[in-house]
Image 1 (cartoon, rainbow, N blue to C red):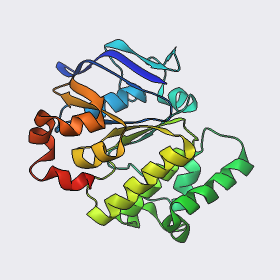
Image 2 (image 1 turned 90 degrees about the vertical axis):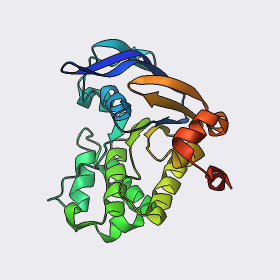
Image 3 (image 1 turned 135 degrees about the vertical axis):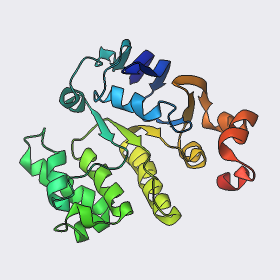
Image 4 (image 1 turned 90 degrees about the horizontal axis):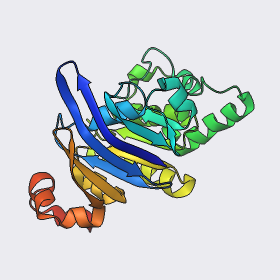
Length: 242
């Protein structure tokens, strides 16, 4: 479904991504793990068109999309939930959801999809008229996901969905991510510093270090890697899989 090939990205003179390649199959959850500054978020921004690569290719269903503007990439089926949520804080929950559907003109289905989002995330229905900026961190993350889903993407890019959230809220968010994949067949590319969470949920994973893919494979194999255990999982990591 998605293929990233030999991607190189610079911020000025600094090279953030150095020949990264990865792929996501239909219906798959793929995790990108790595430390701060590894280039994970930059890869997502390149896929969604927010930043442009110096070289390499990004293919969606065999169509090159790296030169397209973000709105065209969204229409082609890739939705991006950015790090930090980036909500319209001065607008209501309902208005944020409506803005997620700005590229659509099927008003009846938009109304139905808002109802679907409120079923998936019941708190959003209760907070419908509340300003987004007054929501809790977990509620804001749910709204950010729902807003992106309003565009009806085939693939979801999720950037640090657990950032700043309490463990119980993080568990709820990850439960919803799993349901979207299982019930809707949504393909998901997940950037997450919490490697334990990411490797528990995803089917496959890539380890990014200083802009390069240094390891990849099924998450069951990555979890057993001594290098991954030392660098990302820590002592007692096996508790997570039980």
